[in-house]
Length: 200
Ligand SMILES: [Zn+2]
Image (cartoon, rainbow, N blue to C red; front, side, top):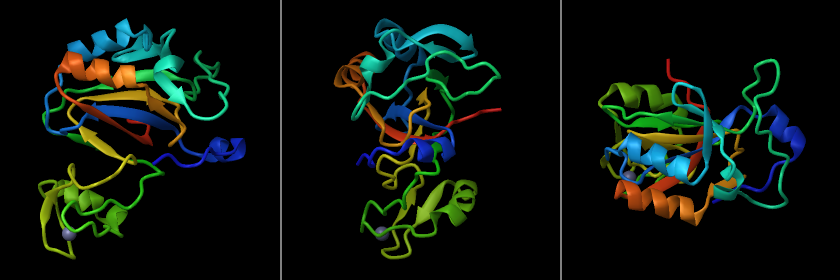
């Protein structure tokens, strides 16, 4: 559920966050080629900025739909190297799903009994080390860390599209964007907001 639109001062203080898209099945192998073709054809991506890094294309703000009054979108890389501008990063395919979380991530829920994992931030590294499994303290069910219910505040995928400089809840992908991805990759996609993903 989108959060209410933040005030400018809150946004200035917030960490760098992005809108991410990934196949609904975090273990699915989405073809990177088909996905970058979709982004190019819809003009969501433009020229290359680096490895798997692109400028926002002409239709970025048509397919990344900002709620409320249209904000001032910075589309050009600012002088001084700031990364606070709209651009697109593609990640993967990875051998295993990659989980992205952020400052906005709420307590995930057990998909079986709906109980919240209150202390998830403390335990996340341990879960990732221990076979990426999470045991629910309430009902005892064991689930993958990638399939517990993070709502739209974290997501996992072997292939991730990252639309950078989007505040959590501020923008969502257009229906056409989601439908075209599904058609071309032959699998449904979902989205969430999380922190910038930097892979070394
Ligand atoms: Zn449970």
